[in-house]
Image (tube, rainbow, N blue to C red):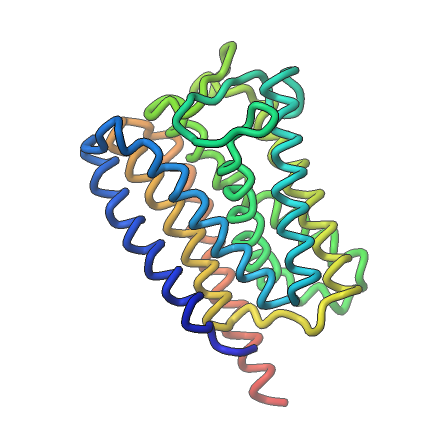
Length: 272
């Protein structure tokens, strides 16, 4: 796989700069109301990095269709919650996330691209050994793993976004920070469908299999870690101990498994 091109790297460094500023401003509650739009830009930058990964890795047509499909389907799915309380439960977004489609901020579609692209890399690397068991078994294991990784990320995203920042407001009560447990089931199902579709689409149309140990792939893994770390820091400063503990317990072994699988795959390729 080719090394990241200059524009891609510049965008990556822009995201890191935006991320660093966000950590400081949000952790110490220094973000002025006039800059609330920066949250949407953060999500769109992260989503654009995920989109570039998919497009460059799997080709403009395949990667572009996957990206567009994630944005459109995720916004429509989120709209079911906003308007009808379906799939994720009943909730409303505040007005600080910019342009909305069907009552859902466009930035949320980009956020889903970030979630799926990053979990695609981690799940793809971890489950690489299942390829020898056949396309169906491998696809199911990969999709379940990717969906679990997406839900793990949401275990900290939703509590912080709702309880601490009130980016969106849930209706009703629940044992987990008053977030409907239906939400996490909805996340699992939507992420599972995305990953399963990606698995069979890429198997049929991609130019070549992804190198999950490449620089570009490692950046996706780092993106997953950075986002969860940011929200974990915000959760800790707000006293969300359970959510923060769960993230540490789940993300740490996932990254260890990714690194071990990546090294094992690299040794196998070098041996050929």
